Length: 305
Image 1: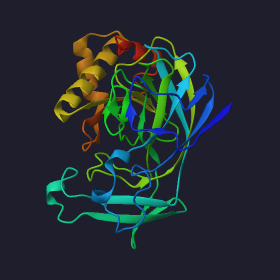
Image 2 (image 1 turned 60 degrees about the horizontal axis):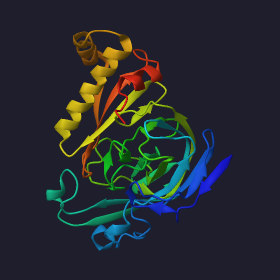
Image 3 (image 1 turned 180 degrees about the vertical axis):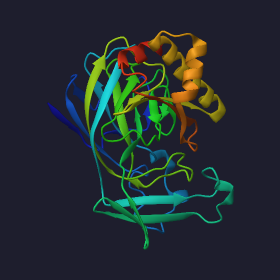
């Protein structure tokens, strides 16, 4: 069954009292139509971020109730396709981003997207690599869609793209999945506070793994698994992601903690997803030639839900 959720069905907080915009069964295909992160408020280069309504920033289309998804389960989302529209928005804002103190003038740049190429300036062209900035499920307390945490949210991780599978812990019955904030392209760090922001639509397939809610969101790609950790302090996030990666290797491979620690230093990449949201997001990459069994990996970092 194919289900479509229009962009006018959206939320600004992941919380326990959300009302479903649509219902799906495991195995269903769902299309989420999305606004850009500015909810269509920026249309031309004279429109500045400082002049928009911030209560309308980062709308996430949904939520989707997935039948048979219960607390303690993993909601599995296969990203089948991401289509972006032909206009992208980039911004620089005083005080925002890693170097926000160096921004002298707020600025908006509108970029045309043609034939899968972003024209940033007349002589600078960038191939698109569409990704989802915000994807998450309802949490036990309200969390703004602009904030990442254990439920997902504003993860701004470039690996959340076509062909990736994401495992999210279910806190509230039905999961209540929502997503938005598409980027035509984003580099690690998203250092300027925004990427190439676009509207569009995402096609996914949803499934449920009973009793395997991970402690933090997990990604699966063709060649690796990623554990995503977010914290206000990037050093804490890095330590937590590293600790989880070692725990996964120890449990999944049935080796000592010390051997897992040494192995992680050889094969686990600790990477930065974004440095600009209320919580910073990092990821630990575990290659599949070391660990192939997703069930073992999820069991190793099973949440206490």
